[in-house]
Amino acid sequence: MVKEWKIKAVEELKELISKYPVVGLVSLYKIPSAAFQKIKYELGDKAKIKVAKKSIIIRALEAAGIKSLGEYAEGQVGLILTEMNPYKLLFFLQKKTTSAPAKPGDVAENDIVVPAGPTDIPAGPAISTLTKVKIPTKIEGGKVVIPKDFVVCKKGEKITQDIAAALNLLKLEPMKIGLKLLAVYENGKVYAGEELDITEEEIINGLNEAYSKALMLSIGIEYPTKENIEILIQKAYMNAKSLAKEIGEVE
Image 1 (cartoon, rainbow, N blue to C red):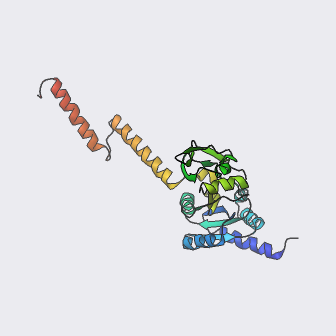
Image 2: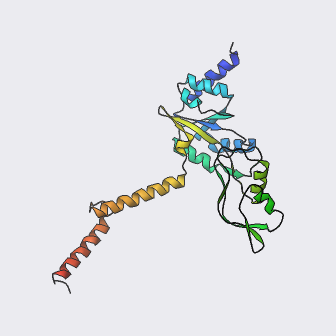
Image 3: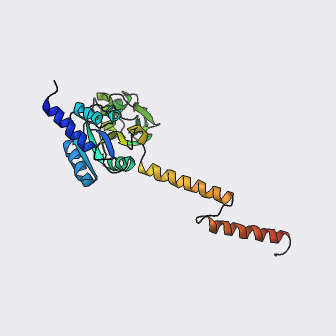
């Protein structure tokens, strides 16, 4: 028999979910309490975060008609309810993410790459900490150098004591502390976090690239627009001048 408090908790959460057009499912895995409270504070009235037992969240989502969002619930999770579109929500959470050292038992969210280049590590016994996990090394000027990029831990793998020691020696902080968006619901559709896995900078760069290509195409086919009209006029002038010179009207 389901306890009365659980029924009430599900119903209250369902009612809250129904008031927002965008509902996100976030991972609370290993986020320190202070960092979590700071994110809640900085969200202000832009969004509301609700933390509850996973079973209650899943039932509330099902009761609200978005059962498929609950299928992404893994580990300790919470709900983030907002009127921001999914990308604005994602970018906000990305900006609030900080790096942290790896600890034994942590799971790599992405491939952990030791980048090629010089280090501050002096030649000596410390090299064994790196070679123990097969990180390639060489010595230049009495310091350890990593000759090429090396994946020391693949996505989804657990970080061992030896790998954590090597990463800490290299002063690399591959872990991310923040709210990870697992999935988000908007307008009857659920988007997995991987589908939104893009940064604000990447979107801006993509738009700039698309703009440049469109501008060059419009110039190439001589289709006048507000953005290219000056270029087309200059092109027409140069073509006319060149033609006039060819027929001898311009010296």
